[in-house]
Image 1 (cartoon, rainbow, N blue to C red):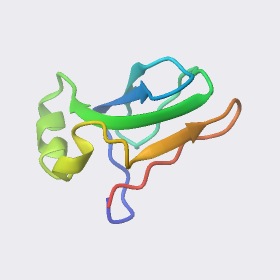
Image 2 (cartoon, one colour):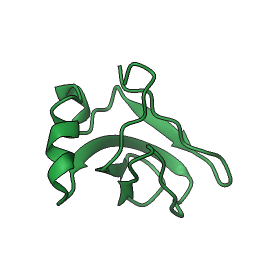
Image 3 (tube, helix red, strand yellow):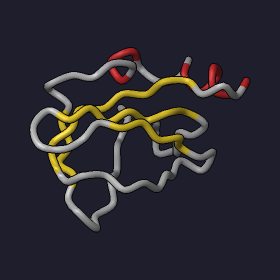
Length: 86
């Protein structure tokens, strides 16, 4: 957000075509690592059990708290996923 990484949250990828949905914890540095099936996904963020997570979640715009068909990312094998929260 505003060029700063968002961390200590869960990122949920919801498959909209091929692919398999999943949730992964985003580290405090804004990165995560996971094996994801190639496909098209919508995504949203959710809190973790960490006390700091609620503070981070309060700064994320509401549109990123649920999946939306106007916010789709294409995931391909071996490529990084970069999500820009605006």
